[in-house]
Length: 203
Image (tube, rainbow, N blue to C red; front, side, top):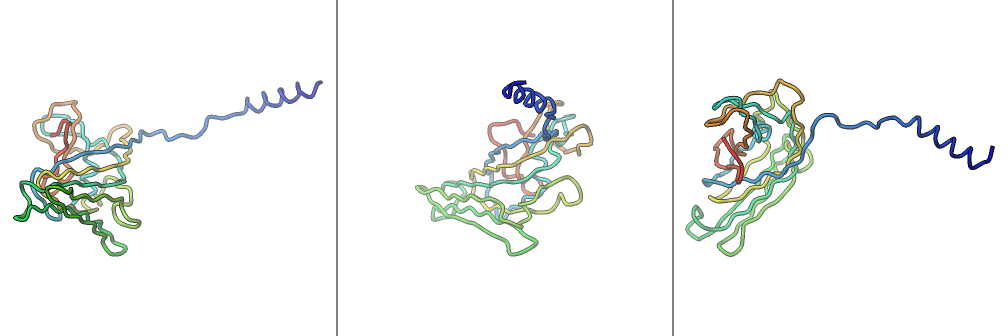
C-alpha cells in the first residue's frame, strides 16, 4: 500500500475517535450596568444580595424571581460633575471603598468641579470580599463595598453572572411590575435605593 494512502487512512481513523469537547452547560453572561444617583449618598453599602438582584422576572405586580444564581463583580466606575447637590464651593466628590476580612479596606476617591469631572474606577483588590463570587444563602447580607457620591453621579458596574437552570430562584419584592416582564433593580436596594438603573425598565 502506498505510503500516502497509509497516512490518509491513519488520519481518518484518528478523526473517527474525536470526542465532543467539554463545555460550560449553564448560561453565563457578562454585562455592564449603569446607574444614576437621585440623591447624594455617603458610604452607601452594597451587598452580595444587591448584585444577585440586579435583574428579576416579575411573577405578579409585587413579586419577582431572581435570575442570577451567582454573580462576580469585575469593575466599578463613577463620574460626577459639580452642580446641584454639591457643596458651597462647587465641588463634587466620589469615593469607592473595598471591604476586606483579610486585610485593610482599600478606598479610592476623587474630587472635581464644574469643569473637571470627579472620576474613580477600580476592580476588586485581591482578597477583598468583592473579589469572590456571590451566591444565594446566608452570606447575601455581607457588604462588599461602599460608595460616596453626589446627586446625578453616574455609576457603572461590570459583572459576570450565571443564570438559574430550572426552578428554585428566590423571590424578590417589587412594586408596580407586570407579570412575565424582566426588570432591572437599583444597585443599593438593600440600603438607600438612590442608585437607579438608566434607560431600562425598573421596578
